[in-house]
Image (cartoon, rainbow, N blue to C red; front, side, top):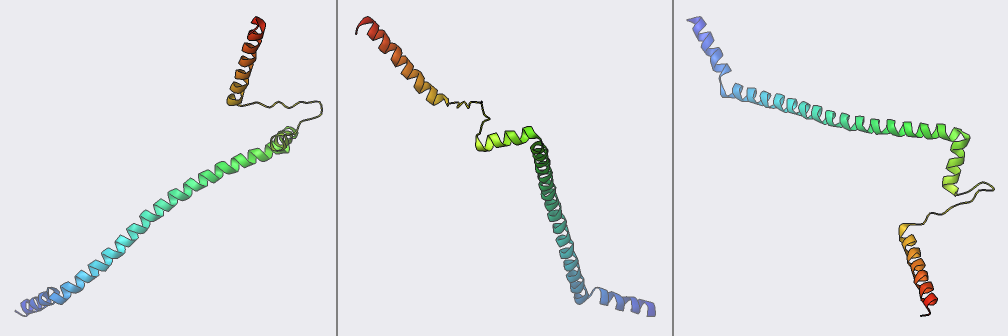
Length: 125
């Protein structure tokens, strides 16, 4: 009987409203902590992907810059860069300007007018 009373007393303590409330509060805080940790893991994965993408872009940029540096170490590369930046030519060379199609069409219409003008003059108009 004594064992039964002790078990009953223990059950009353364990199943009391206060102990259930304390247990629910503990479960809430543990769940909140777990959810916060889960959110941090997701955020960390996203940041890792962004950082890896930036690293790839920087590595590509570094490779391009290293190629440009190697190219500029050669005499041909230096000459090409100077020609591109400053539009210079060597002695004895001539520079050719390439005109856009719009401008070339304009020139063609003038040539056509000259042709018709010459034709009119030929026939005496």
